[in-house]
Image (tube, rainbow, N blue to C red; front, side, top):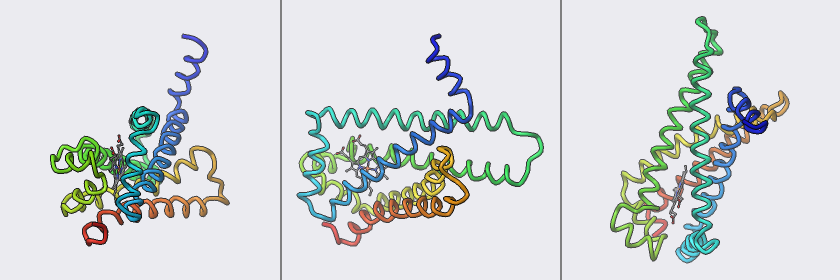
Length: 225
Ligand code: HEM
């Protein structure tokens, strides 16, 4: 084992090392969401703008760009989950037989983060099968030529739209706690900045919720055709 692997392994074994992995991967996912939402909102600009954006994503770097982004995303999500599981196990092992109110509160909140995180994971698997793999043959036919029409057809199914809205609500809740935790782990949450960070986390989470939810809602209301 060389010095670098040794120090990386010591770092990983410490609880702060894992927290930093969760925070940095979380930050990348937060940035991905902002980018994905910005692109998706082109649906309100029109069919041409949305389809040109989808075409650009798929043709970046002669078609390699989208695969590089997929691999980075997959590794990021994998590390985020892996570090969270390791951290939860470590915290459980270290728990004292007697518990204070604060410990009970913290474990309730981390249990909720695990629940909402697992819902988001289930949603992402469904979402990839829905719009990327396109297991529905009607969506698959449209997906190749007209991604805009594919998204519109997908959200015309009320159950699909409702599932997206529920998942987005869980995502909003996960983000409201997660974004604040990123600041805390990276040592940016001073007493003075606490209220600002609270506003940023909630503001960002609500903006993500409104942005994503507006798409199925607009389609169900017939505002986007
Ligand atoms: C109304 C909400 C959303 C819409 C309309 C939407 C739309 C799309 C579309 C059309 C694709 C397929 C891209 C392609 O392959 O051509 C896609 C892929 C994807 N979306 Fe979304 N998305 C939404 C919400 C989300 C959310 C909330 C997340 C994350 C929590 C997410 C994560 C992903 C991922 C990981 C991919 C796969 C990228 C790939 O490998 O191609 N999406 N989305």
